[in-house]
Image (cartoon, rainbow, N blue to C red):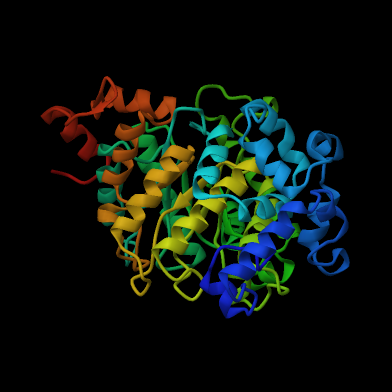
Length: 452
């Protein structure tokens, strides 16, 4: 598995990578001939030693797996690329696939394969907006501020809304990661949502234990956020385990905040997607918790953790971990496409933070390339960051303008509820961006409490 992986600096750092192109190709040929069923028998991380492995094995749906159970990895790739792999067939298959299977097939796929296969998958989730519908594309509005200044956060939020961003979530990474700060930010964002009437959900990307405490204090929590990884040991490094995530999931469902708009019935399966997870290749290795397994496979195992909770959103922060794990633009592009395809095959509403750190060998041409490829692949959402430069986290991501490029290039409007609101308040006309009139602009500034 490791030797068959495309070149990645993290696998080289771990001493797992192929020593040459010839060795990599030989490993891919061997991997292509392995039966998919072998991954259920020969576990990469022992069942007894890892709760993520136990989750993967115990939740496997043998009946769903049956249509492809007799295939090899290579034959599975051919099937995925064929006409029989429809959106309906892939949705039915997802519970029968385990992360190691999709990781294996991704290693023998070309870039065009990863794009085509992912584009076939439709994963729909709902809270106040309906996300993942075919032909639509969403954004997380990320108005981070280095001091959590409320006016700075609201100004960035209004800026993003004027570019049609924010239908996936308005999500803030807090600079001051305390429960008091978390509660204050949650109330700030929820107050803004209620004043403007914007149909979206908010999230403060703090540790799950802080969110649980915020829920206990009566804070308006829409989504519970947590970074997750593909091994028990790596998740322990994040300060979490499945029992804690179970508790948080139950607490968020209890709030029933997804039922606030449109008379949504939680019992009917709508509005109950209450979790938001972020992942990224290299996290297990950076924690010394990789069990000599390559980073692409471990990333796919993180999706098994996410899948357990039927999240509203999942995204890979693909270039954030740094060049020690993904050296530069080419490796970041490949990893982002792998992550998106693998997660979609496992049934997740997958997005991508198309990003890089300032010491990586990458630039905006690389982000444009990955953005375009993911747009073609049907990515669920990307980030909308003012000017693409996150001044709190100090990394480069995608901007409000970048999101509008995807909408124009691929004719992908935002979530239907959000699109209707944009028209209603005068931020769009017939699906195109427009400047609101003077009175409407004053109204928006007043509701945002930003004055003139």
